[in-house]
Length: 246
Image (cartoon, rainbow, N blue to C red; front, side, top):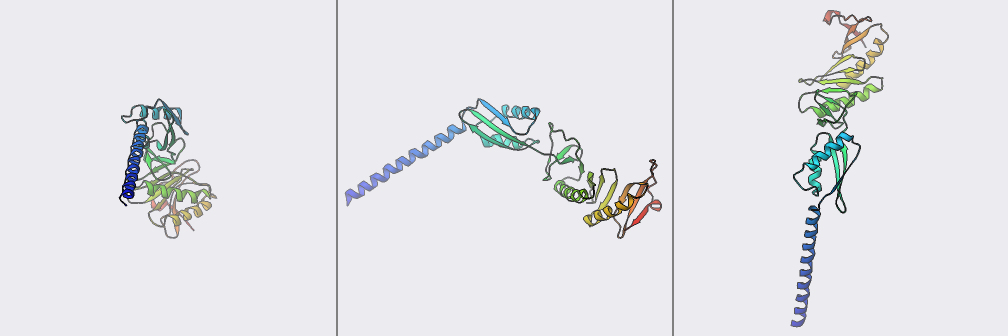
């Protein structure tokens, strides 16, 4: 009985020692992986030459080891124009980075861009081109983007689209379409008021006058300010506003 016990304990000690060796080996391999020397960097993705150069400059200026792939990814994601980055190590000494740049949906408040999720970012190397302009108070980015997407979907069916959308401090919405017509929606029943605008715009098209401003904040109609065909602007006073009944 004593001999069997000693044999069993001896096997347990041997197995434990072997497990310790394996664990130590894993720690060594993990440490070696983190401290691997990087001699080559490959940057891929739908990025311009200037964006690729910018990402390379950021990587070469890092204080941490380039083999710390999570650290590298965090640094790249903190850059305004980068949405995400896939970072991998390719044996034996190459760092491969696939950069996913931000996709701007619109300009935001004159000094930044905004994406479809309502995230605002600055991008020195991004040329927005012919994008709509969205305005709103601080911390309303996602609210404004939500309004923009819903309104634009409804407008596109009738051949309209938003060039400028403004949410003011009181939560009131107004937009300007591709024809320069300013449409005031207010802060309640926004989608119903948009439908009111679309209905009345069909009637306005038959007139030989161009609307400048349409206020939909009426129960049974809209107030319309016109511009004469030759460009003479009708004064914006209540007595001269022409209400088009639905």
